Each structure stands twice: as structure tokens, then as C-alpha cells.
Image (cartoon, rainbow, N blue to C red; front, side):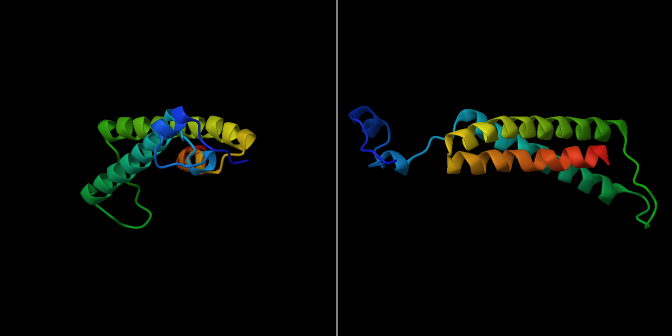
Length: 122
């Protein structure tokens, strides 16, 4: 339910006139979303480098990864899975509080890690 802002809230958020105008997302959700992006973008860039530098790009021939690329893949997977864990924890909190904007942030942090987890398990 909307209410007018207190004087302190109005000084912190001058663009908002009521409590429903601004919902703080929180630093944990921002960290989760950032780590999800880093994990997925890093994975894509590493895969792109491996694919471009592969000697034979024939269907059915596996791509070979050197140890540096494997370590970077593991780092990206861990970062994405941490983002998924943060997304899951904050998702439950957003559902309990019925907060729509934080819910979207939590889902956005959860999805890339879920894809990584699915990839690792299959």
C-alpha cells in the first residue's frame, strides 16, 4: 500500500513522492546480476577464442582446450553458480516481500547460473 514519504526518505529520494515510486534493489542483487553477466560473457568469449583458434572445425570433431582455457571455464562456472545462489536466496526474499522489481533482478541473476548448472550436469 502506498504512503507519503517521510522527510528523511524524501531527502534521500527526491524524485519519489510515495513509497511505491522507489523500491531499493540492494547490493546483493546487484552483485548477483554482475557476476551472472561476468560468468556468461566470460564463457562465451573463451568459447569464441577456442573455436576461432581450433585447427579443424569439422562436425563431430571435438574442440581441444588447453589448461588455461579450462581454468578460465571453471572460474566462469563458479562465478555463474555463485550468481545463481545469490539469485535463489534473494528470489525467496523477494517472493516473501512481494517485491516485483527485486524479483526481476533475482531471476536475472539466477538464470545464467541455472544454465551453467544444467550444462555441467549433462
